[in-house]
Amino acid sequence: MKLLFETKIDRPYLEIKSKFNLDLFVALKPPVVNLSVKRFDGCSPGNEVHLDLNTFGMKQKWVSVITEETLTDKEWSFVDEGKFMPWPLGSWRHHHRVVALDDKSSLIVDDITFECVLPWMNIFMYPALWPTFAVRPSRYKKFFRGN
Image (tube, rainbow, N blue to C red; front, side, top):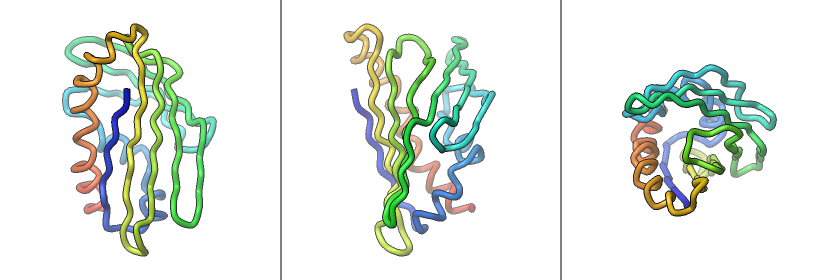
């Protein structure tokens, strides 16, 4: 299954890259998820993110590993892949892209691919995950307006 969100930000892509840190990660927290960051190494290959999640009373752990990073004169991107995810997720790949549109604006792309351990559950997981990422465009705009 795939989720894709794009957000135009009136900032150069390298400035946005410099702000991809724990503060931004916390600002992007979905509204119905109580999230505790246990470890946030950064956005470079080998870095890890460890979370404790509490959604509607269900406590679960999430561990992602940064597996790729690319920097060109027009784009910066990195990929986090789920190492240990809450049930019923079986796989997770989140490709984060910051693409220069011109010298003053950029596009942030959240390109997520996931699969549940039982394929028939994907149809239920999609509407559960969609709103948690649909808030990102407004949160990105608010975060970068204030920074």
